[in-house]
Each structure stands twice: as structure tokens, then as C-alpha cells.
Length: 236
Length: 82
Image 1 (cartoon, each protein chain N blue to C red):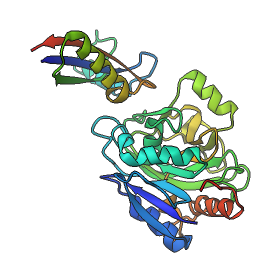
Image 2 (image 1 turned 120 degrees about the vertical axis):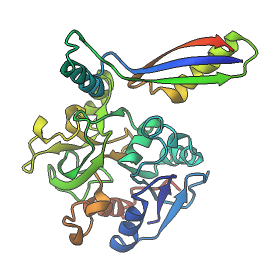
Image 3 (image 1 turned 60 degrees about the vertical axis):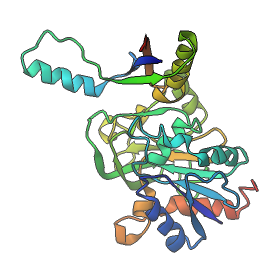
């Protein structure tokens, strides 16, 4: 399974994602510069976190117009797997590949600490190696992670089962105290209707090995691999 | 040549935590009559356009495509001939 890690000017978690795919998953991986207008040959694309050059105006706003985003749009339409982490999630929303937008954290603080996420759906390509309702411990690091969608869109996201992760307590309760940024309905990650695009604010690549204090993030990458191996993606 | 003065603000229905923080700061300076503060962005965009209507259409398009995110923001602008 060949992975591509998209690099925007200012991406700063690209090397972490590359490392996880190469060393932990033991799969082929290449960086994809944002000026590339082709993503041919890849089975899964990762839009990593970092302060890519959207923040000058609005998170993800400028990155969304990079040439690679046109290729990613087509890749998604063909059923290709895309995961956007943190700033990658923000870019996917600006590009219209995922619904909603990110507001400044309601605390106004940059939040950088471990969070607990409840897996709301373990049948997606991104979570099939998780147990139903499993609680994962994965860190966040963001200032603009307050998920917002208008009431109609939010209702659709919920009704279509697009909420993949919610911030929760260590035992899985979805309560305001477990919400680090003010996100509506404690939403930490959503997928598109086709279920081949995931956006999540927490950083699974930062906790995919025991040496980092948690291996929970590994489950997301292993899920992608299992799903692909079972023939889940035939977008070539 | 035209200059567009563009204001982008969070939609009224969206809570503005930055505005609330500034309001609290104003209250602590004793401006207790301040009942609401909202923060936004201000752009000055100069552009060459054949006439006012063309400039207006372009500025509107810029706002819709890039300068504002219609999911969370509203925009207004005025055009000045320079």
C-alpha cells in the first residue's frame, strides 16, 4: 500500500507521518510537494498537521488552492483514501471535501495535551481495527480546533453517521468538561459521506509507538492498511 | 483604479470568544457600558478594473472564494475610486 504525505510550505508533522508509515507500518511512502498536480500511484494520501500557509488569512484558506488539491479532489472522487490531521483537516474543510469550519478554541488558548477520543464508528477504513466505543488517548496541538457547522449541516453529519471521533473522558463519557476547544457535539473527527476522507484534530502520528507514551494512534494507520488489503479501495 | 475596503466578520449567530475577551478587558478599564464587542478582519484591496460594476463583481468573487469563509463569516465592502 503506497502512501503519500502532502507537504505544504510550513507543514511540520510531515516527517512524523512519513516515519509512522515507513517504520511502524513498514509500507512505501513518498512526500508529495503541494505544487504537484498529480497524485497518481498512491493508495492513501495524508495531509499532515502544521501551520501551512493558511494561517496568515484563515486556517487552510490558502493551502486549499495549491495545485495538489485539484488532484486530491479527483483522487477522492475515485474512492482514494485521504486522512487530514489537524491543519490537514482544516485544509480539507476549506476545500469542501469535508463539511464545516474551524473556529478559534473557545478558551482562546493553544491547547497541547493528550485527549481521549471515543470511536463512534469502527466500520470506517480508518477505524476498523478499533473496538466499538473504544476510547483512544491521542494528543492535540491546536489553536483553531473548535469544530463548527450550521444546524442543518450538523444534523446531516450526525444523521449520516459521519462523526468518527468525539472528545470524551477516560471512560468514554461525552461531556463538556472533556471538550478541549468548544467543538459542537464534542466532535474531534468526521468523515465524508463516501467514507473515504477522514479529518481529525488529534495527532495519531504522535502516539503510534510505545516510546511516545501511547500506541493508540497506530490503530488508525493499521486500520487503513487492513482495509486496503481487504480490497476496500479499487480507485486506480 | 479602485480601492475596496472589505470587512470580514464572524456571522452574528457565532460566538466570538476574542470579542468577549476584549469586552471583559474594556469592562476592567471601567467602560462598563460596553455591551458587545466583535472582532473581524479588514482588507484594503487595490485593483485595476474598467468600471465600478466590474470592480464590484470581482471583489465580491474574491470575498466568496478566499477572503471570507461562507460557513462562518459574512463580508461587506465599499469601493472607492482612487
